[in-house]
Length: 258
Image (cartoon, rainbow, N blue to C red; front, side):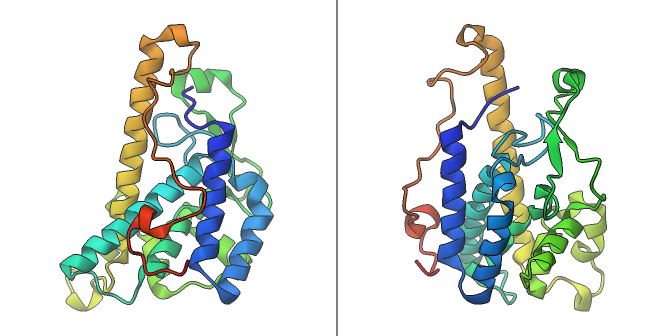
């Protein structure tokens, strides 16, 4: 198993995640979001982004690491769409950030139980890279259904555009999205560019995370003298974020409250 984040980085990412929420939203939405994240804090901070090593971010803290990367990508893609004059469809930067922050929320589980739990089969871990397994005690739901259930459970209202942005993030990798993305009737075609922004942001993040894992995996195989962990020189360089979130340094000119 390749270790990517240590305890300090996991905590740093989570602190940055909560600061981003508190600096972006206000009013009832912010109160409801903080209620939800306070409730699931002990679990979400260690949640992986997937269950299998060769997917992406299948390690403790992988979920938040992925969410922050997708949010950064989404804001940059939104800025490019704005510069090009495309994608105008009833959303602003705050909507983009909300959608990016919650596109994978269902991976956390329900209100009280984790969806991904450590795999107790060493054979599956060593031979198939299945670091985690899904929680057999929970009702099965697909990712989007559980995401919307959680948001509803904690009283967090979303717009139609945010709903579409979250639901369609996987693009045509999800067969059920085909009728949204491919329409032969112009009246039924997507009226917002947010799903396209989200798909591009998510797939770029997953691609980066997979390539990072491949490089670290190769280092682990070819440098066994480091005890199974890459040395500092072998680790991929990560951007150091400031303790206080500076939107301009992270996302550029976001026009979001600071």
